[in-house]
Picture 1 (cartoon, rainbow, N blue to C red):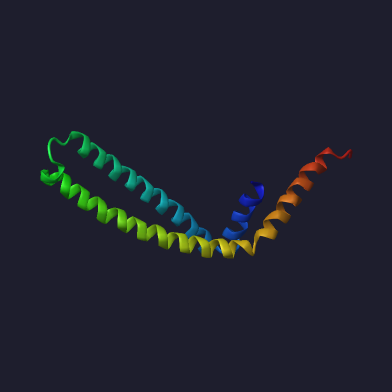
Picture 2 (cartoon, rainbow, N blue to C red; picture 1 turned 30 degrees about the vertical axis):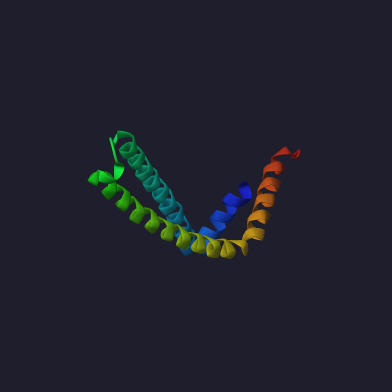
Length: 117
């Protein structure tokens, strides 16, 4: 855990563009998941409240059509985000040894307090 946090700090210092892009991907992914959940809830509400044939309900058909468009748009965005995330992870791998080294150094310095002066 500490290595990952320190790796994030090192990457943010050395390559702030990558860390910023990674942060944006996390936020975008969360927004997409929230939007999909809202669409799912809306569809379930319409299905539970509709009476008779669902295909005759113009509102339900419209909501389902919009949901299909939005969900396919989100799917395309998620695929692009996955590709970008892989590229960022490849770049972060070059700093992994630095993060591990800093974590070891941290624990060494922290343990120095236990040495008898």
